[in-house]
Structure formats: structure tokens, C-alpha cells
Length: 225
Length: 225
DNA sequence: CCCGCTGATTAACATTAGGTTAAAACAATA
DNA sequence: TATTGTTTTAACCTAATGTTAATCAGCGGG
Figure 1 (spheres, helix red, strand yellow):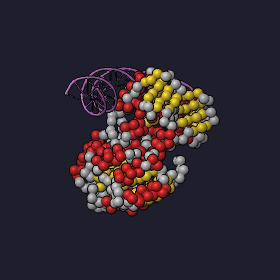
Figure 2 (figure 1 turned 90 degrees about the horizontal axis):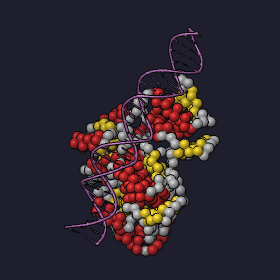
Figure 3 (figure 1 turned 180 degrees about the vertical axis):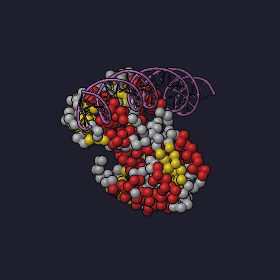
Figure 4 (figure 1 turned 135 degrees about the vertical axis):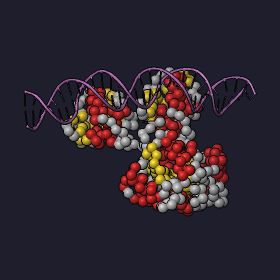
């Protein structure tokens, strides 16, 4: 289970449902924020920038559909996952919802199992990464095979090392600030010390044998051969 | 994206759904034909010989299930992909549909993303089905005979073990994330613990005797000899 | 030249993923 | 139904990996 403390916002006017969903999601390690109506949902969304927003269709002060439309209009929520909770009865709204840009539906009454499985698979989908093979001189970095080769020699890197190298090598010559590196490789939520980067850089340099990572003091690192 | 102008027939009596699906599929480069009821679906199927037929279960003038049965009876449509659209929550029909010879089902309301990904993966699967027998060095994996041979030695694997090995071996060198493995071998709806994969991997390694499955920690597994 | 800043290095420490095992739950078969 | 085989879970253990903190080295500015 990848517990990356993913943030989820649930908006529903029925406290019971809110409670059940919250409980189940938290049990699964998600970080949950709730809202009781449409307006509150929008506020909380902006405030917490959740990875997934679960919206009840029927809510006071802006329906789920409206909230979805408003959020989707902003670049910040362009790629945020949105899941609708629908009552069985309203087919019409469901169709509307699709065009509005929701990623999936769950119809009430909700079975916790089904629900969790939906949430999981949504995140699974999100996790689709760019799988581009990088090729710089004699160095090949293939995220698909998770392999790094230098002059035909296979070099085995650990996960973080690989991710770090991949990031740097994705834009050879460009300097990556320590901040950028942290948020790209470690993610915004995780807080790690500054030394951590150095250590990983060191391991990469060591394993590769070639000096392909340059330190730009006071700024960051860049990749070049 | 392999856009070879694949032909898709969609049959549904709700114009809205027809429209949405058609729009999305065409956007993805497929050639789409539609039908409003069961009989029309059969006609159009014969006329256009689509690569994939998407059938709503609930339709006037022959249900999706009936259409499927009729088509499957003809050799012409023996290998055609068939995908069912099922209304909310009728589990019974879903099961029925699969046994009738559908290749997969999507339950309404349909999220475009989910839907497209299903369609893609169906075609992907189709392509794979051509190359049934896998042959890597001294290892032969034949899903037809459900048999695995290493250096002529027949090795008997259980179902899940076989499916798992087959998946990994289908793309030697490629790392499969645990998520991918789960959804490919176990299916999206089933929820099993993380350890389950390990145990099966172990059994395979044990039975094969060769170390052909490599662990990529924090990422997944890959097959290589 | 020495201070202070920055990164390198190292080893110790913490965490986590995955391996291993046995046993329970489930299915298939006779 | 008994029997056998398969799949899943649970508990525990190990090794790989990630992080921290302490120390060291280089460099530029006073």
C-alpha cells in the first residue's frame, strides 16, 4: 500500500454519509477534509488542494455539478480527480456530470468496499507516468524497465536515486533548484532535510562512475556529460 | 497510440450516451458507427464488421445480451470484441454478460476516461492474443495448453501463478507496478492484500527453479532471464 | 588567513518493502 | 461429503533503502 497521505475532500450535506466515508478513507491512510455544502466545498478545495474531490450531486448552496464546473474552470483543479456521488434516481444529471469533467461516479447508497475500490483505482489511474526513454550519449535511462545503462553496462539504482537521476537527465544542462528537486522527487507533502538530496546525488555519482551531475553552488544541480 | 482507424459500433437507446461515447472515441481516432436498438445493432454489425461492439444491456428490440448471443453464434463475430454497458447496480446481468461471451463490461454512468481506458486495453489485449505462446530462451509459456516448460521440463503452475508469470513474461524487462499486476491479474474490482502478490511470485520462483523474476523495490517486478 | 557558508562524506539510525512461513478460507473434484 | 489443491491472509523477519546528524573540505570575503 502506498501511503503518501493523499488528500481527499468530501462534500455532502448528509452528516451520516460524510462520517462513513471519512472513516473508511482515513482507515485507508488518506487525509480527509469535509464540507457540508457547495460553497464550503469550493473554499476547502482552494484551501487544501486535495488530490481527489468527492462531490454529492444534491447539495445546498451549489450542487456538485456546479462546484465541479467552477473548479474545473480553474487551472489549479484542471487535473484534480473528481468523483460524484449520485442518488440512484437522477439519470439526467449523471449525463450532465460526464460532460462537466468528473472522473467517475459512485451511486448511493454507497458500499464502503465498492467505494474504496473506486477511490483506489482512480489514484491508480492518476499514477500513470510519462514513460519516455532518455538517451544522452552513452547513457540510457529507461523508466519502463527501471534500468540505467552506461556504455552497455547495466547499473542498478534504488528508487529515489533513479527518480532523481531521471529528473535531472530529463533536461540536460538545466539547473534544478533544491526546491524543485524536493517537490518533484519527494512530493510537496513530504519534508526531508537538505542533506538528503546530497546523499542521493552522491550515491548516483558513485554508482555511475561518470561525472555527469554538476553542482551549482548555492543554486542546485544539473545534469551534463 | 496505435490509431489504425479501428471500427467501433455502439448500440444504446439513449442518444445522450451515444453522443458522448461517440465523441470521445472519435477524438481518439476511432471510426464510430451507432445503433439505437438491438436489431439495428445486428444489421450494422454485419454491414460494417467492426473491431469492437459496445452494447447497452437494456435496449428495445433485442437486449444487448441477446444481440451478443446472436452475433457470437456466427463465425464472423467469433473473435470480435464485445463490451457491455450495464445499468447501475445490476450485478446479476453483469455476470451473465460475461458468460455470454462479452469481453468486458462498463457500468453506467460512464466516465469518459475510464471508458476510453477500457477500450484501449481491450484492443491491447486483442493484439496480444495473436502471440499466444511466449518463448524466452529455454522457457516456453503456452496459454492455450496452459503449460510452462523450462528446458523441456514441464512445470505445472496454478491459475493465478500462470497468469502472473504470463503477464510478466509478456514484456520481458519491463517493470510491472504492483498496481498494474493487481488490475491485470486480479481485476479492478477485486481487492486483495499486498502480500498476495509476493506469495505468488515466490511460488513461481520456487517452481521454476530459475531466477527469472527480478524485484524492483518500491516499484514492482520484472521478468528477465 | 581565518571565518562562515555550502556541499561532500560518512556512519549511524529508522523505515519500509518484500521474503518467508504456516495456516485459514475457498474451490474443485471425486 | 471428503479430499485435494489453490488462493488469500496473517505474522514475523530480513535486507534494502531512505534519512539524519556529525564531521570534513573547499572557497570567497573581510
